[in-house]
Image 1 (cartoon, rainbow, N blue to C red):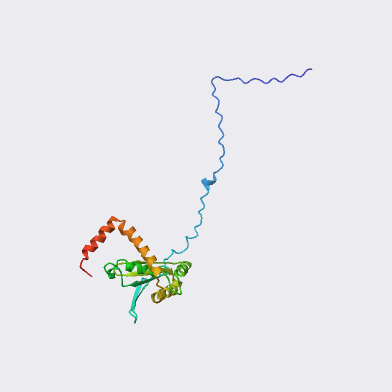
Image 2 (image 1 turned 45 degrees about the horizontal axis):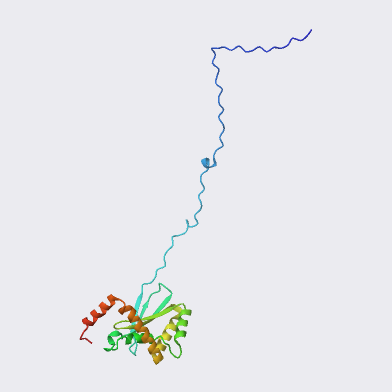
Length: 212
């Protein structure tokens, strides 16, 4: 006999039955590395070092002495920088000029840079610059000063050159004429071309009129 076909019976739907909801699967989250791992602190190499301490600098000291030739020496000792400053002051300035000879103190200041037989003008400047220093001078009412600033190892060089021009300065008419023209130009720029300087210059004339 022919086989009887299997017929699946269709399910009978009950209109009053509410089907159970299908639960939504909750995905398994991968833990964030920043959420579960504590931050690693970068080690500070100076954290265990003692705090730096400043090296104390001694207070400046002053020593004074007068030599047998009348030269007064003042030593101002300050070790805050490895340099030395040599200042040579002459107690003569514009107050020592005669009437009608104005500017002579300033001219003499310029002539002191003309050199000696040992150190001419160019050699002197070159030696100071090669040593890493500089020099200059100024003329005041009661003093004319010359100074050099050099590395401390060059103190002897500055003293040698000052002593040399103190006793062996070369004078010539050519040097004098050159210095006089320079001083005249400086006077024109600093006094004659400046109304305030002119007023102050006139004030000093009236203030010290009749004095010597």
